[in-house]
Image (cartoon, rainbow, N blue to C red):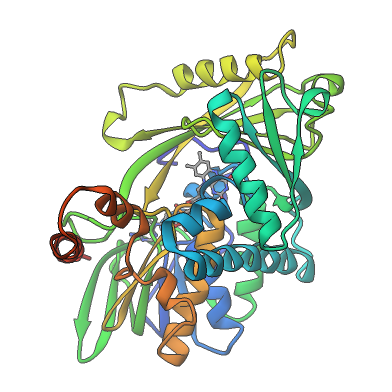
Amino acid sequence: MSQPPSYWLRSDEYVYPPLQGDASCGVAVIGGGIAGLSTALHLSRRGAKVILLERDTIGHGSTGRCGGLLSQSSAFELSELLSRFGNKRGLDIYRSILKAIREMAATVRDNNIECDLEQTNGYFVATEKAHIPAIEEELETLKDYGYEGRLVTGDELPVAGAFAALCKPGDYALDPARFAKGLGSVIAAHAAIHEHTGVARIRNLNGKVVLVTDSGAQVTSDHVVIATNGKTLNAGMNALAAPFVSYIAITEPLPAAATEKLGNAGLWDANFNYYYVRRLPDGGMMIGGNHTWRSTLGLESVAGVAAHLRSVLMRYFPGTDIRIRTAWKGDIALPPDALPNVETKGNKTLLIVDGMIPGWIAGGMAADRFLTGRSAYDYLYDARRDMGFAANLLRRMPAPRSLKILAMRVGLGLKLFFSHW
Ligand SMILES: Cc1cc2nc3c(=O)[nH]c(=O)nc-3n(C[C@H](O)[C@H](O)[C@H](O)COP(=O)(O)OP(=O)(O)OC[C@H]3O[C@@H](n4cnc5c(N)ncnc54)[C@H](O)[C@@H]3O)c2cc1C
């Protein structure tokens, strides 16, 4: 294995044979993470002829290393979306997130995928007084739009050291590696999957796309969807996403009494360091976070970050004997506004996502675009959209409006120009 496995990725065994000999299809999908799997699933169940190629094994990338939380919290607070993108677009983004969560859970249930799926509450927690207004604002906004949410304070707070928390129903947690493998089985009933089949090069030939694999075998297709978590197949700079690594540590089982207020809920710390916590079915506690720019790789050891994450857990559950069982890291490709990023150039579509929910959405969009020429979500997640974050930053700058619009256009143009893939 090129990287150590996660708690979820217990074996490196492959199920589907490597590609041997040339093949052809309607759509070739590169990458067996959530984005590629979602693409292949959405396409194959609508009758498209699909071949999915995975360099390692299904779920071996970030999907099988992630926390397995399907949550409306973290990057998707409704109040934040409305302020960044305006009421209509912000609400449509929020609805698309909720719809994707429901679809993913339904896919697990309908196909009997054994991945410990649990419906949970999600806590968004203020561990500093300064975060309380953000939590109150989110609660008010949810109520204004008819969504459920509850303010939790005092003895009811799920962890120590918190001032307030917003509790929302409707999240899910699962074992992400078994989820990915289960999606693979569903896809394999209608499409071809080849593990241990890396794509080395993509060529255009007579209006078709030719994928040259590491072994030399080739796949010729009408369209290719590249879902490699921001790792483009060309050497050029990928300006569509910022390369981060993120970490997870898992403890030995903790006494039930220490974590009973949290129960099986997911927890997000409103602190910018982005800590999230979840109790696992075996009583161990998972803590993730500590996003770091990928170029610092090597300066930060997994063991060092795990010790830091343990110190955060000791703040949440003081007086508890907390021992780290295992820890690992994985890659994150972060689009500038953290939303799914779908870019189509001729017969190629590139998906860049931060999160399983964005991955699911992006795959559905790629399928729609191939089958119907467009997706209902194009105005939300096409790579040429107005990235609310950059736009908001510019908006606050003291400069004439025309200059700001020009700056935005130039920025977007440069971003797309430097994005070779
Ligand atoms: C530590 C950590 C914790 C996280 N926690 C959560 C969480 O709790 N909830 C959540 O929603 N998200 C979480 N995320 C984010 C989420 O895991 C990722 O954003 C998402 O899984 C990315 O999916 P993907 O399909 O784009 O990429 P990946 O899952 O990385 O899949 C890409 C695949 O492409 C393959 N590949 C690459 N190059 C080639 C090639 N040339 N040929 C063939 N195959 C190739 C790779 O082997 C890989 O399997 C976490 C991420 C990390 C790192």
